Image (spheres, rainbow, N blue to C red):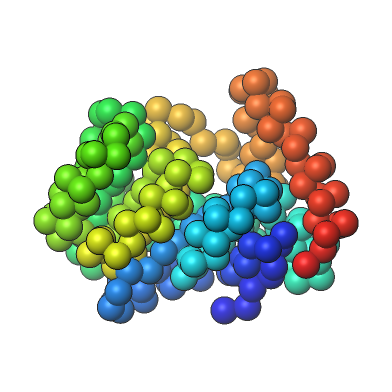
Length: 240
């Protein structure tokens, strides 16, 4: 896969459908494959945190979750044609595994959210095979038990929803212990699947304006949105 190097993070130039197909192929291969979906805020964090950057670049699939990343790729002369957000890729994968029977484990979010997401997924994706859930509130001493539960479930695909950089670092630290075929970090997606958080309407998502919709709904995000020009300026100055 062709990649674009954005501030040291090597992003795959793939769209949503291509990403889902790649993940389905990963499920037929041996060994653990890592899937991360950084936005501009995450890439800026990685730019300042070499350890996090290394964890991101170990991914077998790294997609552009955020219009800022898409714009950055265009600024660098290697344009990514479509934003490939973790939630959108996850939806496409769910459609596929509902037909194949591949086993899924949901890990993350507040207590009870993963269970609610499971119930809604079962309704929305008939045939989906969800073999386990665990919330994202745990201590380091709990990790071995969580990994045992994931492995004993027979899960092939693991959605890790701890937020960045926690989810990427958790997968990196435990990759050699996990028996799943694919571990995918998808942030707050379980809250959306569970109906706890409303996704921006299709118009906003399609036109790269999800950030604007969120800002209208949650004005406290203004500081995070203000970081976008800094990201763009850093890309221009530092380039590749």
